[in-house]
Image (cartoon, rainbow, N blue to C red; front, side, top):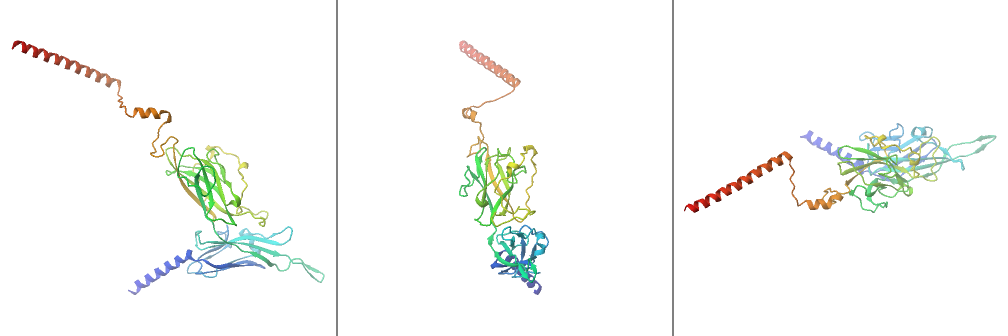
Length: 396
């Protein structure tokens, strides 16, 4: 009896600990320390922090994150630091401002409250460190760079936005437009991507899209934001600050299938600001891009496109969006889904009340001969019967 009670208590304890993983949250804004030897971020949480504190886009790189595991090293005061002489490990670099000669560093730290997944509880902090150069004269010697001290820090608390895919009728990219669920082939539609709430830091970038059916047929329609067939869909265009993206399209479907699933990979990006400086040799893939690169692409034929394309779902900032659309044929009845040809519509209506029987010529000839014989036999029998009746009446 004692063992059973102990087991139940332990299970309840584990369930309680697990439930606090996502329900946990930060208390106040984290503190940032820029230099002189490290960049350090510290925070306080309501419950023990069980998750990962990492530099954006470098969660898998050793030394670029701190993982807090349940029953091992969880704490209510999570922190992470990286030495200034080891910034390149995580794609960071101190850049000297061309005018002020100050050293600057911009990065984003993310508190992920789940050890494996991105959840709505995650918080991101954009950190901008500025290091001022000091020139000090001591006797006849110059100390060009003394201890690097913090001049200012820029902290921002932002909830990670969630991209949303909507398919609407027409050509006006409005978030208030009704979602299209049933259209006909050739109808003008629009693919509209937007984030769940306005953000002054984040935007969205459409990567790839494909159309697929329930039986597994699929075809890529957007590749790196560019259309693979401009007759079907246009290249992706972006609104102000990349808060939304849209592409004009024409309703299409696969043969013998009415339901089409549109699957897109969309990533969140950092809005391009005047104070953001990308150092030479550092990729700017995490910065939002508004100018289309599609004109520089060489258009490929439809046959050259991969038929078994797979969307890359890896990456902390990549979101996979799905939307189902029912597309019926041009001449389908929108109510009953019954197909009919327009040029034969009236003829079909007239012939619906006429019964027609088709048969082979041999069967028709045999049937005609049989009916003719039966007709003659009937006439002869009737004549004989009438003659016999008259004969009998005369005898009487």
